[in-house]
Image (cartoon, rainbow, N blue to C red; front, side, top):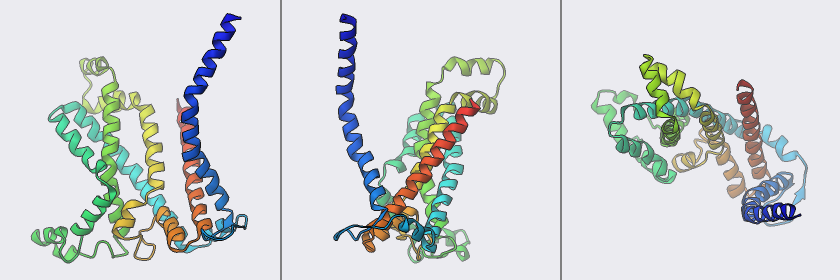
Length: 293
């Protein structure tokens, strides 16, 4: 009886400790998701009565060329982020881990762009890429490539790629720090054994480091995908998603619908699309990763 009473007491103590976290998570995450799901099924301008219209908002979205363009742009920035941020972050982290030269200095340099507000980054590059007074134009002219200069943030053929590359550059430091921390957690004796066996740096990277970092790599891929899907800041600051919707992401499209068009139902439908895509990718990717284990 005493043992049973102690177990019950432990259960209640655990519940009491978990309850604040559950309440905060429910209020800040679960409730907004549920409410957004409800709003996505309504027609509402944010002031009057909500009119239930079912899935009409979703059918309107996928019949809208601007939404489809924003969706394509979002998937593009997500794909490019996965192809650049993860591999480059992994290689730079390994190089930094191996050399130890000016370790703290380079670690800080890599991470500085991450801690700078996207507003400041966007404003800075808007000035640097200005086709009239921008430094980038002056550099191209100085090295004899002035003919390549163009209005980088208003030319529809390049503006999206410019915004994407700036975003990749800003957040690549996040993955360098994540991978560097993972490398430092690996037992040093494993690397020493590989060195004794004659493994070079490249062999150690592919046969020792990457297999040991598998779990962190999975988390980083999911983190990169979901983070890219909800991108908003840089296009909003630098181009406002323009010209038109050329450089718009789903977040920018949602912002226009809600805060410029007062269409909260349609905007909420966009957030549900982002949530579903992110959730489906995370579930499929994690399942595939577990099957390979």
